[in-house]
Image (tube, rainbow over all chains, first blue to last red; front, side):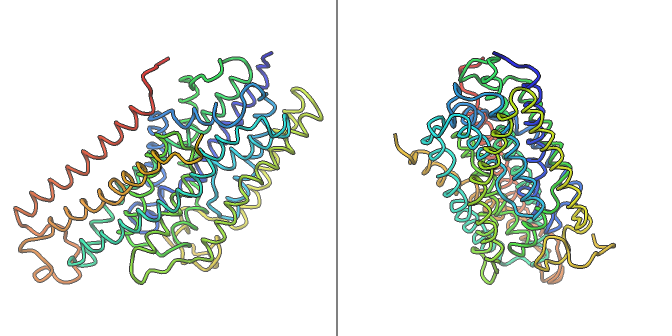
Length: 382
Length: 90
């Protein structure tokens, strides 16, 4: 029943998704450090890449959730996985183009669920697993993260209130390096595993692995590599929205936000909750705005993000379902190939579009003027 | 089957607060302690960013705080590794 050509294509596509996941989410770990100047942008993404790699080896609980807890593995075929990945990648790239830090995890899960439903109907989806391990954590995690970050921010300012603001800034910038590293580690632990889960799902679907298997070592290694390279490339657009758009961040707030994100993500990962690191990081950043007197949270930016979050699962599911329809209509290996060629073409198009309003390590910290791309090009800005 | 795992939820909130807010607070306490001593704002100027105040006790407390933070992180990561790799190794 196995089809190795399709399997190889699916694995490559999954690693491609992992790559986009890395560069979409660099911002979650490093946005605040970059915004406060704790780390130079390029160093930040390099450190984050290495730690994502390490983090990927830390735990396997989330991979198990994705591989066996969301859809009925008996009904999943390789075509379903390929179509699901297509949905996830397309949604991820579109939100990146607009600089919205939406959830890569939801894009992936939405895509897989959409294509599963298109293939075998709603009963193939394990709704209880989906709601209890994905949707409820998605709603709760930003709230908990905001709470923890607000408590942290308040106590950091309280404890250091008699220090000069320059000394305080200096100290917390050092602290931020540590906390940002922990977020990168946590990100690897949570997000690299999602792709491991999907590849494991594909291997189970192909009959290569028995149902309920753990991810084999080469899968872990490949995913760790893909996500760390993606992280190193850096999603400067999202870094900018998170670091400059949401709240103006000082280094104590940055440290509080990162500590909160790292703690929540690591804890949830070890319970097997595939939560969105994006949701957690955003919740934390809002929390630091709430925990400091006089800080301003740009609720309109937060609202725009929340809207994108609501749409992520269903939109990716629709794209996933459509991709399945197309592949099924054509049939066999050719169907999957057509899907992936269309996907590659679309990626090229989105990348081309993004060039016209480029955000990179040079202008990532330019003054927030309400748009992702800085209003005026600032050639000499650091 | 319950939709919310309350056992996991309270653990995430409580340990989240301890690790996510408590550890940075201990770091801050260490920093504050480090800044005590003769070389405070009065002598070094109000816009000084010098972190080490020069008090021996302050430095000792600071080192203790930083060690506690590092130990807690190390232990936490070890726990995550333990939980994430159940005894049933392949």
